[in-house]
Length: 227
Ligand code: APR
Image (cartoon, rainbow, N blue to C red; front, side, top):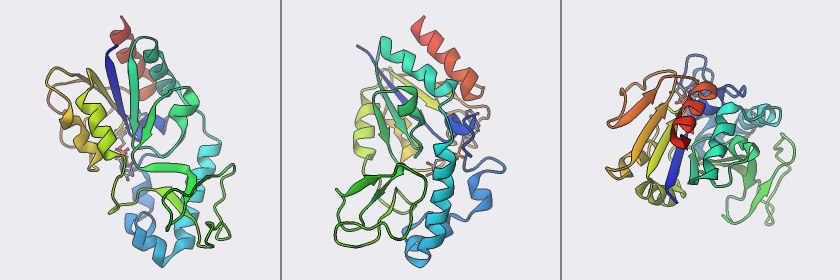
């Protein structure tokens, strides 16, 4: 069975009502990265960081997967499909994708700062200061912040090395190491890029560009691959 790797970013969830980061009106236009998305911010002002992610989580609990997420599930009929997502939402899983690797963490989870294996899943949106690990230390969001290591990058690189087809959807390819994953695919790998806009760096070499929103463009690519 051939291997398909799908690399997704915030754009695939935009039509589910979740904001992207760098579009006009995106999250980083309203919040400073250094105030809410670094370990230093968490140490300086945990209430602000908690409230930023609580708001994201509250939106996620009322969001639903869209046609872009759902179309990707069809590929599993004929291919070994791995989704590598930069997104911290769970919309790929809820759409039915069976293999989803989260590079930047998961919004519905919290973790211990001292025990990397202590991870809890929230069943509601609110993370409060009363939530503690077994040793009594406050739990932090299970998010890979700017400046932190990306533990899942090695398995993601391995998946890209073995990809026969790579589909990149809704990412500005601005953030490394995630953006560098496309360079690990072999020369024979067929590549598609779905995005309503060209990235600031243009279309990366060897990609077929489908200039469309995810709810339209993903179906077009999936139809072509399954044809
Ligand atoms: N369908 C598809 N793509 C879309 C849509 C849509 N409906 N709407 C916007 N896009 C595209 C934009 O054109 C842009 O190329 O989605 C991309 C979003 O880019 P970013 O906001 O930079 O998001 P992303 O690439 O996922 O960011 C990477 O940065 O801040 C960090 O950790 C955060 O995981 C995130 C990482």
